[in-house]
Amino acid sequence: MPDVLSAPLVVEFPFTRSLGPVQSAFLTGLRERTVLGVRADNGTVLVPPVEYDPVTANELRDLVEVAPTGTVTTWAWNPSPRRDQPLDTPFAWVLVRLDGAGTALLHVLDAPGPDAVRTGMRVRIRWAATRVGAITDIACFEPYESEPHGSEPASHSGEFAEPVTGIVTPARLDYVHTPGRAQSAYIKALEERRTVGERCPSCRKVYVPPRGACPTCGVATAEQVEVGPRGTVTTFCIVNIKAKNLDIEVPYVYAHIALDGADLALHGRIAGIPYDQVRMGLRVEPVWSEGARHVDHYRPTGEPDADYDTYKELV
Ligand SMILES: [Zn+2]
Image (cartoon, rainbow, N blue to C red):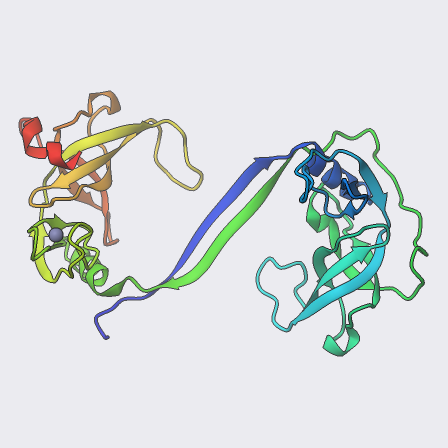
């Protein structure tokens, strides 16, 4: 399909979360080169520790130190490491049951090749040189020829440091997005600074951006309809938090805008008017970004406000 577009798309979101008493102790322990598990109701030591017993659901708080050495219970070879994986050379994903633990921990094993890895092999933790209270404080596992429980004593340092109470988990989706027929036509029209939706052959509603099918009737849409460029603010919010990497001063207004001729409101920023004067019914027009094929923001047209009855179905 030559008319369908395709482009790389990255969605990235660093998720900041607080830790409960068990995860806090576990990560604080890793920072001090100590691995803590938690004793379950049946006596098994769970590593990594959990806050509630997986069988009885009782609260678990009996933390137990286990050894930095263990046994591989299963593994898979990763020949081509990806960005942000623990090692940048080929490695094995391993489940390791640390000595003293009843469950296995997922991590990676630094090995020269898959022939050097086997279930049952003995391994030990290679600690990261700089530890911050995260699972990456375990740099990886490495082969270790010894009998079980032959581990070196854990080295404790910085015992007066503050406990680890939160972590930042980076979430990232890195893929190629193919918008499909309807959205491709919409994006191509934007290049000519036109906004094109599609009309449902059954209910006659015009959807912008078009989805290729009517969400109400479930039938395919094909008839293209140019809408706008002017529109009406149907509802809005005032944004007070400055987003990282976004060069817009707060507060600013983000609105739902029903373009003339469209039966679905789209989103846009409102500028060219003090944020506290934006209102439902405000008539706006697009201001296109320089060089890029999208609307930078919408500004007031100066027309009288739209009557509520003309857009109430779109709020
Ligand atoms: Zn329809």
